[in-house]
Length: 475
Image (cartoon, rainbow, N blue to C red; front, side, top):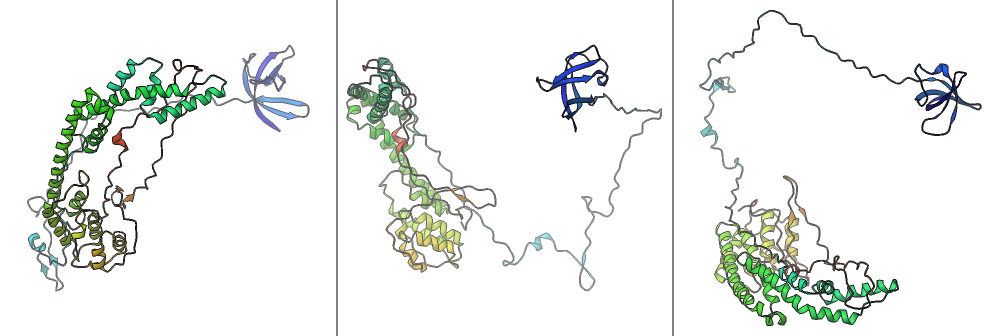
């Protein structure tokens, strides 16, 4: 049985034969008859041949010629003539008997008796019975939204100044001390464990911890100054939670005794008082504006998100909001509208003042589930609608916001938030042997940045928008 292989010609003999071997290899090899080779063949050429393999060896039957590329181009000859060029033109004929816009007049439709029936003008066709007209919904006017407050972005000028004043052997320990003494103990323990495995002297733990404790007061003051200066820069637009965290951190005795912090501390406390009064005034104004244009759900949600804990909700505004909420829960309202209002009023300060005077036309399963979930907060509404609520010790929480979906697709709920876990501390890099504290260096490149107190606060829960939002329901 024959097959095709690539061979390389290695030499020629006087009897007209050639020696060959497999292209790029030492084996197999053999001898072939020179008559099967094309003219101009020389030593070192690589050819594709037809070879037959049998017990006696390999016999070359002939050379296979590959495809030869031929540059063939087809052309089209353009033959001209001496006749003059005549362009083609087109002219549309004008309609006859049409109106002034060129459109033909409509023929009248015949009646059942065969007589022509004149068409009614468009003004008469629009006067349809109210039962045949589709209901129209006009959304309440939009309320201007206030700009989002800025978040605190502290710098590192004061901390870098303190670190630059320290000797080079104390800077790594000072950077670790910014994250707390627990981080210093953990890193020191891991570094000594590696040194012990390598058979090298360990660092004195007591001396290193004492050094960190001595550096910590200066570092804490510098860290607070960086945050306070950033808060002062954006005092008029800073988020109120971040500003409170900076002012609360100033209660540290080390910061209170620092001369460079007293003036800045007084200015921030005065600014916090002014900002709190301003945010409280804006909070009431936003509720008034939403209530004035008929956006009940938005007003209820805003009432449940005061600028500070313990903010007093005015009685007059509470009565207006409760009356508007009760008036929106009517019998002909859609079930989605009921769900949206109940989800908002359950976490509002006026939830005990809201009562329903009529039941919805249809108690859908989703509406019943909503009433059962919020029954402990709205017992008067559950009783009025005749929905039994199971006794539960756990208080319901606001729904999480839903992720916006495409047009026509149902909104998807966000996945549950995973439980907060402590950030793992990265392993200490190789630490050279250091019998004394002066020569010891603890690497801190893998230590995460010191977190701000503002980032550790628990976010205020947000009431999720119901599928029937304020813009898509009866408002």
